Image 1 (cartoon, rainbow, N blue to C red):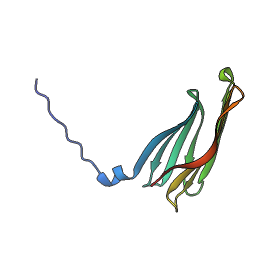
Image 2: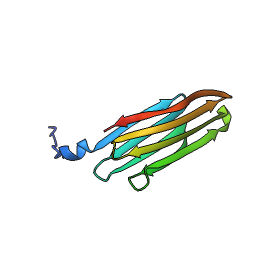
Image 3: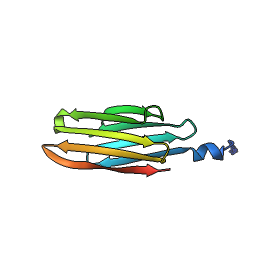
Image 4: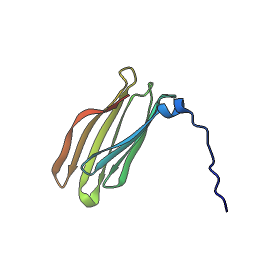
Amino acid sequence: MSKELIHHPVDRKSLGNQISGTKSFGPLTITYDLDLSIPQLTANATLHGYSIGHVVINPEHPSATLGGSVGIAEAEAEVTITANFDKKELDYTVDVEAFGTTFYKGSGKLFSW
């Protein structure tokens, strides 16, 4: 049995339009996918592995806030994600607490493109 290599055409331009990543703040994880060809960003947030939200961000709706709590761990989190398509950057503001302790509270840049 011979194995054939199957070649799939690669659109290098569309590959360059995709940016994905993950950032964690203690028990909070933010996962994002940016498609510059649209332009549109989708983001998910989980707290201790449980989903606390999903958003779609674009130039018409450049900011969204996700938040929630997980009762078992007495944890709660709120994250605001803002895409500045003119400055080509994705910013965040995060507040994460568990068992009455602040894990992280702050803001910054997730990435630039």
